[in-house]
Structure formats: C-alpha cells, structure tokens
Length: 189
Image: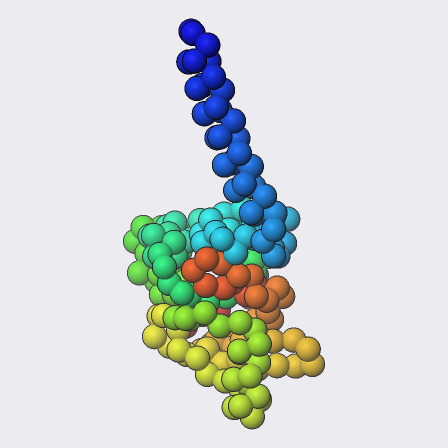
C-alpha cells in the first residue's frame, strides 16, 4: 500500500470514529430516564428503548407475538402505558403463555393496543385533563375503548374497563415517536 492509500485509509478510519463518537456524545447529552436498568434515549423509538429495559421483556415478547413492532417503530406519536414483567406476573398462571400463541393473536393485539393512546401525552397533560374533569379523565385508546385516569396524592393512576387499577411508576419516558409511562398492572379491555 502506498503512502497516499495509507493516508486515505487512516482518514476514513478517523472520520468513522469521529462520527460514531459524535453519535455517542449526542446520546450522552440527551435527557434520559432509567427504566429496567437501562437509559431510555429520546432519540430512539418506543421499541428500541423497550428492548433495552430488563423490566419489559414480557411486553417486548408480546409486542413481537402480536406483530406490532413495525407499528410502534413508526412515526406515531403514541403514548404507551407499559406494564412491567412484574405486572404481567400478577395475571393468572398461564395467561401470558396462552396469549402469545398464534391462535390468540387477535386477543393479544386487542390487549396491547388498549395500552396505547394516539398522540403524545405527558403526565402533566394527563394531570391537567384529570383536573379539568373534576378528578377523572377518560381517554380513548388505539384499541377503541377508553381508559379512566385519576390521581391520588402525587400519584397518577389508570383504571381499565374491568376495574383494574394501575399506578404510573415511571412517567414521561420520552421517545422519538411518543412517550412511555411505566405501569404496575396489565390493563384489560
């Protein structure tokens, strides 16, 4: 290899390190929230971030089984109320295993889309809606049914159609295509 080629190769290698370094530096500048032991980056989409959370393995597997990965990677925006693995563990034994079977895809999709609002709603916006609704706010999900939001002290809650109550344990996990609010109970339409 002649010296010009060596210089060109060295220059390309240096540029690639500079660009990857800039991307890493940009991610370091982002305001992240820790979820499941991993930083959630606002520049990543809902699926990219959820896949890094150790607390959302069941949710990610369910999203894959329902064929919703592409949808939740799209532009959105979406507001996702993301149940933790511990929330899924509170369901009756065998429920998750049954729901991820191909023959139950329609039911799984219905349950998962019931956890999603069209649009991006911060906890501040949900609180304001609850306040404007005299202690309660109803919001329509992507699935088509409504969730009821309410507050107790400094905590935000959501109640599903069956009366199950979920507490928002981590709010305002911003994504490139919306926002995630982590919840402690699976919601059922």
